[in-house]
Length: 381
Image 1 (cartoon, rainbow, N blue to C red):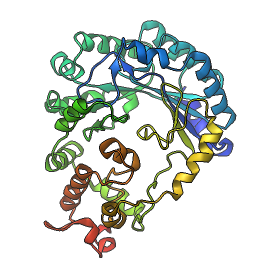
Image 2: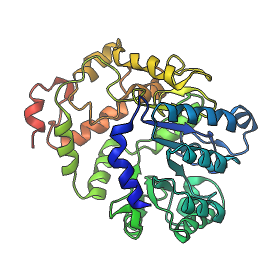
Image 3: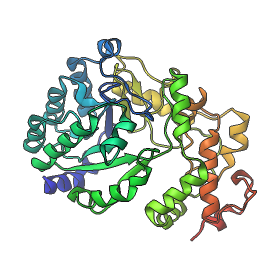
Image 4: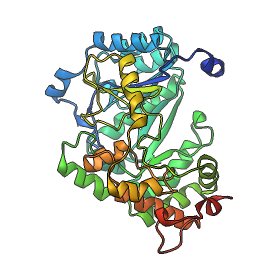
């Protein structure tokens, strides 16, 4: 399997069409109720289930993606394995020649499913989120009794059938003391290639802006900027790689153009109900395309996002002139989730990037990044 993955990757660039990758959010429902999660409707939410795309509708989307030259589809949620037709969806995607990446909590991985992944490999590592290294921490975060046992059972099935998977985690009060243990365990997983698991800690708010109380909880779980920087340094040992990557990628100030990423350019997202988004985060009704929009038409419409400019005076005063723009996670999707607009600065993200820049010596104690003129000299190694 490994050799085949390498072989296909060598020639990806030769056969790519206008669509390179597609994210399909199979459901917003989840069998966990994680305290930090921005998209986890109850597993038994009948209203949500009723409006989810059918298998036939998903087949149409996958076929269209393949026709547009798509090589990879990511199946996510919620928990994608909650779909009773998940196996059919997976097999249809693989028969189209698509590589399949699966984001899961592993709790619904059965012997049958692991055997299927072994016999018909997804050609991408399955990504498993670990909410705690022990029952108490895991279930404090998942808020679901019995979830740790089923999580471990799912992982054991993957290991039994030698299905490649990697792990990632979250930083929360219940598991923050387990990070060294997590890293040590990750080193025993052959497909991790001795890399430390990715850690999420700057949690997204609910992208649909539909639960004020949940958003308050999510905000309360975010570390303060200084604590976040300390964790990054302690966890990674140093941040030299971050500095080097940043210097190579930064050549000019962002200006008033809002969409600086590739969202909607060669990649798309389909939400659980068939609506087309430029990325996983951005659900603004002014941008999301309704169910029935073809992927080809969505690509045409989203191409215009590159010309969208900020009008918010604070964005123009700060973000448009900020040399930390690549370091900060500020984007139209994050702005929409936090403020209901595409161009309002997210203060928390600003504070985190400033704290990190001060640690790296790019900002002095009382400076703000948008007022720095000699930034190019500062960020050079």
